[in-house]
Length: 137
Image 1 (cartoon, rainbow, N blue to C red):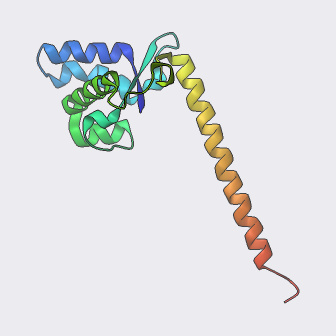
Image 2 (image 1 turned 180 degrees about the vertical axis):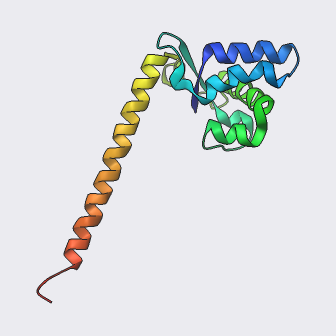
């Protein structure tokens, strides 16, 4: 699941209707690659990347493999897949659109959580190393 700027997705849909010109799509696709630059008050929409038919780790990977036009089409498909709700999730349990400010806060919290887990793993590993270095032997 990714979140993408609503304005970028709307722009992509419009440009795809009017022909698939890379130079027309690129400014919108760039917003998908650099969502940190989205104004805080803009809305971010959830998209389900399973709709693309292949697993990608990042937007950069999508761009690299599919190019500008392919990536633009992939995100439109991902949004349509999300809206179709093929897993039939209850509406109240589904990811909701959020402002870019909320999305950035969520990302920051996730990063802090991951860093905390990494530190715990490192500390556990260091403790094991210390136990293995028994000076009495």
